Image: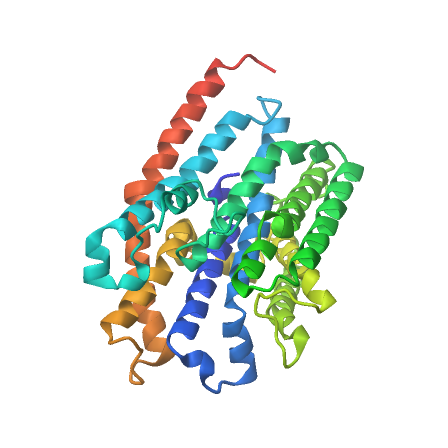
Length: 392
C-alpha cells in the first residue's frame, strides 16, 4: 500500500516518532524529575509507546500491501522483492548512521557518548547484522536501535506467517498463538537478574511478534470487509461514522497513554517483573492501537484522520524513520554542547524545539540522500522482476 492512499497513517507514523522524541527530550533534559500536572506527566512519560504504534502499524501496512498482491495481477506475494524493499528501507540509513558514529571526528566534534568503537569484532559483526540485544548478549550501542532487530525479525518471519492469510480460523489461531508466545516468553524472562538483558530479551521478537500479527489480522479483516462490499479505505463515510471514529481514536489513544499507570506507584517503565500483567503488556498495547488504526482507516474523512493527513504531518511521517534514528544522538550532542545539561532558561520546550529542528534537518538529509534513492532503486528492480515473472 502506498502512503498516499492512507495519508492519515503516514501522519500517525510521524506523530509516533515525534512522541518518542519528546519522551527522550523529557528524560535527557531533567524535566522527568520535575513536578508536572498529572495528564502531562502521563503523556510525556508514555512517549516510548510510540514504538508500539510502529509495530502494529508495520504489521498492518505490510500485510495489506501483500494482500493486495494476492488479489492483483501477480496472484501471490513476491517474497524476494519484499525482502529487497525491506532491506532498502532499513539498512542503508542505519549503516550510514553506523559509519558516522565510527568516525573519530564524531567523538571530538559532538560527544564521546554517541561515538561507536566496537570492543571486539563480534560486536561489530553483531551491529552489522542487527543481532542486537539477543544471545549471546550484545547490547545496542544506541538505545533506539533495540527496535530494529525486532522489526527485521517480523520481516524474516512474515513468509512463514502468511499461511494465516487464507482464512479466519488460521488468522485467529496465529493471533492466539503469538499472544501465548508473548506471555510465555516474558514470563520466562521476568526473573533474569540483570536488568539490561531482562529488558532486551523480554522485548525481543518472541515477546513482540503479537503486535505485528495484530496489525496483520486487522489488515486481513479490512480486506475481507472490502471484498464483501462493507466499505473500506476508499469509501466515503457518513458523518455519523466519522464522529464515532473520532471518538474511538481519542478513547484508544487515552487508553494507550494510561496503560503504564496500571502499576500505580510502580508504574510500568518497560521492565517485565513478577507482576503477571507485565507479561501481558504487548497484548494490552496492541488492542488500543488496533482500534485506533481501524477507526482512522474506516473513516478517512473524520476530523482526526483529516488532521493526520495534513501536509506537515504527512511530511513528518515521510522522514519518520530518519527522525527516529537521529533524534537521540542529536539530543545527546545538543546537551553536551550546552555543557552537559539543559539550562533552566531553555526548559523542556526549548530543548524539544531545538532538538526537533536539528533532528528534522538530519532526517530530511537521510531521506533525500540515502533512503529515497535506495527505495527507488529497489522499486525499479521489483518492476523489472515483475515484468519477467510468468503470468499467474
